[in-house]
Amino acid sequence: MINENNINSFLNKYIDFVNNISNNNNYQENIKHVLYLIIPAFVVKYGFKYENLILKAFNETPIVLNNHEMGNCTAFFSRIIKENKEGLPKYYTQKLIVLNNYNNYSLIDLLDNIAHEFNHVINSLINEIKYDDESVSMRTGLSYITYNINDLSKPSGKSEDVILEEIINTKQTEDVLKIIKSFSNYKIENVEFENALYAVNSLIKDDYSSNAYFLQSYICKELMRNKTFIPTIENLRLNGNTDDIEHWFDDITNIKKSYQKLIALLNEIVSLEEKTGKNSIFKKYYINKIRQKMRDVQEIVNEFENNCIFK
Image (cartoon, rainbow, N blue to C red; front, side, top):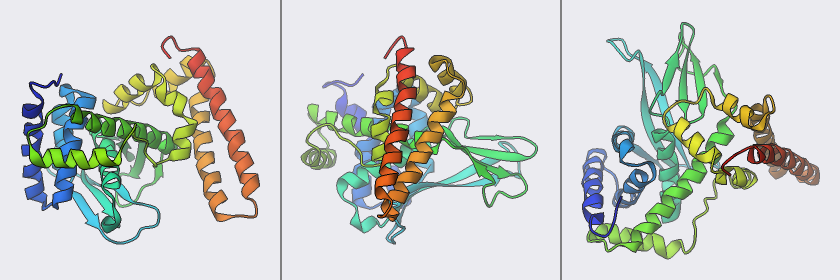
């Protein structure tokens, strides 16, 4: 546990690590300073038990800058899956974090996007790949992308739980930024770290809320606060034990396929939200449909909450 006596030795360890990977990857100064803040915050969030996993994520996943517009996509976690011709593991991935339209990033955007994408990386490293005689599946938190073993160049399918994965990841990103703010409670000796922290605190006055997946996060806010759901799902997701989540969720709601229904509703809301932005004539119709889907989500969440011992 960090305190006033050990805070600087704790931070200095990760400052040295960031300096090394920044030199190796030719990171700009503002990227380096953001990593000063993010990496120790991840260690605080997940605990020293996962320190090596966290450092592995940042060491093996370089940040690439792209100054071109790519629609609404500001940043993404990119991987190429490859077959190992020389031994085990049979399959592995090459990873990147891509920051699009980089020159237009504010400090908070930079912090949020890097923390968000690296949180995907950290929560995907354990049991990242599973395969059989026909297919290879690559895990991103809760969700999977599947490839035919004879063609690893393009996916043959993907799981439906991407939106729930993003909602959970957004909540965890907010946790990380709140931990970063908490560093200001200590006297920091490293001037670069202190200056970066000061800049963050001048921009985030209260509890931080991410703009990513705002509507979906709002709909699931009670689920994200639930003291049974979040600790359980975070542990299973981090350790790559995601296969039993559906059964666990349905067992608590006592409703068959309630997890699948929740996933389907979240996807339908995203689709309706996109249509609302594109078609002004039917905007009211789509908004009413979204409200109905939101009520359906709330019914499932209420059943989960009502049957939990810890809420």
